[in-house]
Length: 207
Image (cartoon, rainbow, N blue to C red; front, top):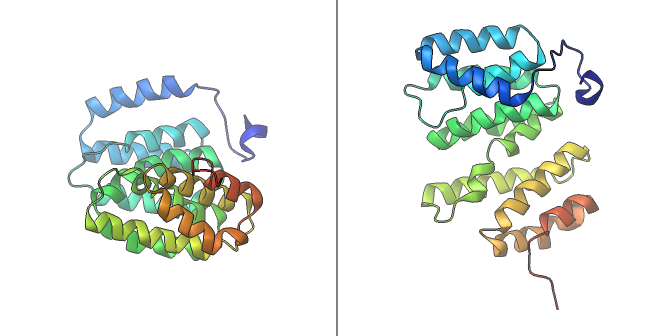
């Protein structure tokens, strides 16, 4: 697992379904303050499965109040160093962003961060914006904002960033293919070929 994730930390080999079961039980037995404390401790353990469990403890659509949850997630982002942990935390983060789109103000600062994983998180945590069938005006504005970030990152040659841009556009193309076609017409030539291909995967083929 250490070789696969390419991050130096302790690995227990605990499968994700077992972590899911544990965190479900912990959530039932703890109030919000208790969950935050446990999540912080699991993260600080720097054990792979502990960090995954920390993220899963906070992955819940309805949490009120949730400022403490969002603050903890933001504190973790600059410590990302592997895709699996980054993606589990991003799943928790996307719930908090969709609960309050004003949090995009903080996320926008990540797109110029020195850490690649932090830049990537700006796109991965906002993926729910691509999946809305009937977006409200505020959600449409948020979607356009993130497309602006993606455009700004087209010149970033890191594979994970290019992959994230292609992923974001591919998901959006299922709901708004015209907007993705417009993005690719303007910015597609700047993307790496694999990212451009992924973005266009579900677009109608030109006859």
